[in-house]
Length: 353
Image (cartoon, rainbow, N blue to C red; front, side):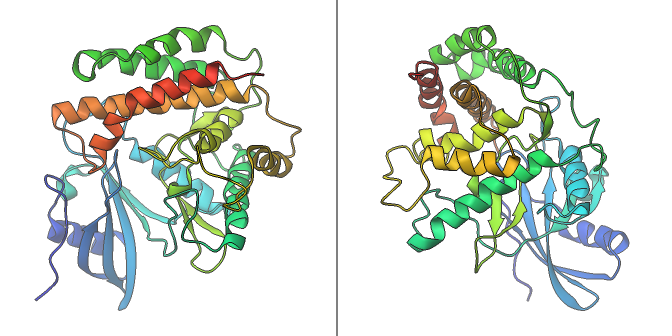
């Protein structure tokens, strides 16, 4: 008897229909043995597919849009597929994509299939599971990978039209302010969010760096590292990627230094030296050296902006939770973190210097 497939409630699908489709879509695909839904995938449900191709065991990952009514422009798996396909072609560490399918009769929504990367996902940036001498190299590999992304020639990889070239931060503030305000009747008002909605546009940096490809959610737990060394095998979850401000993209990754480990992984309160982790300034220097820039202007502003944006995302999750359409088991944790994250963002505004 075959092992049962594992789905969260309301997120299962017809495995036999998917198997029939994959036999026609992937050369040599023989059989789909087992489907297991990953615990993550807050926005887009994600599944491991254990299969056989040409008689050899092979694991894939399927990522799909969630069922139900969706916010326009959200859950853009087509964009994820496009950017990963382009980046894999030039050797940037992402999983190989195999197909994009918009036929809703297969699993109920549009989906794509990519390779499953076998390695380590490090959930806690304090890296308690690693030996002390491994921790700095992991941080270096992480932030150098981000700098490498920001150095990619978007024309060369065919992504020049992947987003608007100018005004990234202003557009993001406007977008997430609108989504927050549209949901206040369901998810509630948050005083710090409303202060930030006024303050951020009024104090935006006068000059932004030249736009680059940005990931939008570049965290340590969105990366797969090799099992035996500090090498990045793949960057995951490209839903928020676009053409944008690389300094703001760095600030999103950097904000782990100023956030507690709560709804998101953070380092606030951790003794960095005792934990053998780079300081804020050391981490910034590694990134700037790799990206070949002298420094990052307005970093505190960008950290506040990134925390505001994440708080708006969590506020949206709270709305989905109230409506009954949230798909992640961590939805309640994210929803509960809105006020604390918004307050933390407001505190960045008043940082000295």
